[in-house]
Image 1 (cartoon, chains in turn blue, orange):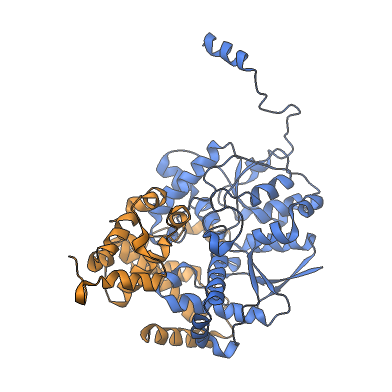
Image 2 (cartoon, each protein chain N blue to C red):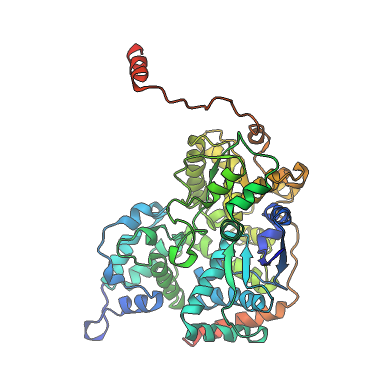
Length: 314
Length: 189
């Protein structure tokens, strides 16, 4: 049994409740026990660092200090934005003890920051601490037949000097996990494009444009569904999808899963525990592809001469 | 207008460099940031031009541009910058300086973006966590756009996508104290 300090983040109690609950199902299979940071607070998200420097460090620091009181020294974070704020704070505080001392004056009562807790996104935890092979071993119901576009967004792998995980341009960790579950990860070029993130409410026009491009590229890659590990990406791509379809006049109908939902499914959890009814875009169509694997590989490469002959006939 | 400090020093460049930890002078204007930026099309001045404006000491014009408000801090630009300049940190420095020196861009979009962040921070100050439903309601009221996103509400509420309440922190007082100390730090820099 492994232990992991857990920072759920505000959205785990709200828009991404299904991420949180399926994560817990997955970790049960993987024999990892979560320990919540007691009385954790919001990380400040985008708003804190947009408006002020000190608060943007102070809010995550309180959580880091509280986490240091727990036995385990690795903190797992589900939300990509929380992860980013926590990691930025950790890296900057560790680099600059003078700054850490100054920010620490905002959370004196909680304790002194020591920098002994490591911060990881859950995707990073799965990839580095659990391992793709262990995940493969736990699969009881292969997702073979399902084609997915793995979408990482901005914050899980960028900036490289902060996250120090996977590639900032073409990451593959989620693709490898999905393949271990039996699914096929498509060649998807918009893996790390921005979905519009925090503009979801204040500047919706930008989100419809950027998320619309991601949906279009995912569809073009031949995916039945998009897989994400970030609550804001999920809500922008899923909840805003009907509006995007209306604006572009194209029907995408492409559901957006959390990676943990697919893992829990492949680990044999009953489908009614996976919170699929919470999705705005129905998931049934995409899930119906599971098990539909043609015995012959779909793309049999024709010899070049045959292709030339065909084009001559046309 | 180009405003230089005493002895012709570009104090704006110095302020931005100090705050961001970057060296804007290293920018050689290749424009890779602009072609990478997902929101450059919405900016008054795309990142490359802002970098040049800082080099020229155009304090006023940089503050009043909407560029730093539209920056999503996605870090795509800095990842591809051949000079490895932390452009989002530069944008952030310009924005923080503009806020500190009370420069207000009153275009509708910037006002809305700023209002959203202010409401978000007030939610955390009050509850220690984000109260999504209340935040959205306040945003609609304070931007006088009551029916924004209302078509999403029935589904989102019915599916429990957006919960009706929030579980506030036990130590909510700690957060209020943190805000006070952080504000004091901000002033005594």
